[in-house]
Length: 304
Image (cartoon, rainbow, N blue to C red):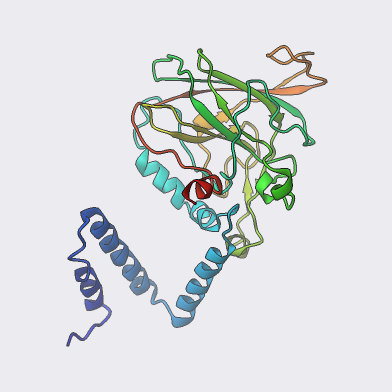
């Protein structure tokens, strides 16, 4: 009978996966075991620390709901989400940079006409967003669905509000690009905000003396047939958290200078009703393929 010790055990566990039929699954499990075992040996992990880690991960899972993904949040703040993004997008070839999906891609992204106000009932300064989707050579891509979502003026996403079940989506929508690859809409100027700190991930952030803040941004998911799905944010230039985003998601290419305007009308010819802000950003798509993620809740309904 084998006498497993702190060096022989790792090899024995790896051998236990020898009959795994899928070579990629086999490889991933073997490498995971090597990394986990090396961590335990390197740190001389105690029983109390091991028990705390199991309890922490249990609480992370228990905090997950149909509108909240605490495991994605954990992955984000540990930099794992951005690392996975980086190794999968090493060569951009001039395409728009990618960043994290985040834990708030939820619910229904209702198709809306160009120029629609996606935040009609929210307080905040008016922002007009105009954008264009093209290939790497600048050719416009028509009939492309683009999902957008962002936090409100208080730093909350719609799904974080206790009234979400009755009031439904806000500051999120889907637009379809026109023949020139363009789409545009109205919303409010987003602000920087803290990630949720009422769960185990927030507890970890606060205990380690890290701030929980994300710089102001708008999320975009562009899913053009024949091109890699683009998951990204557009950040607002000048935000004080651009250099210390708690989820490490900022890239220079994704920072947009938001113009403060006083024109009486917005670019679509509608009355502005006072000072407003203009965000202009174009998305360059990389040829390829891939499956765009589905929003939580919406994906659950399809699977039901």
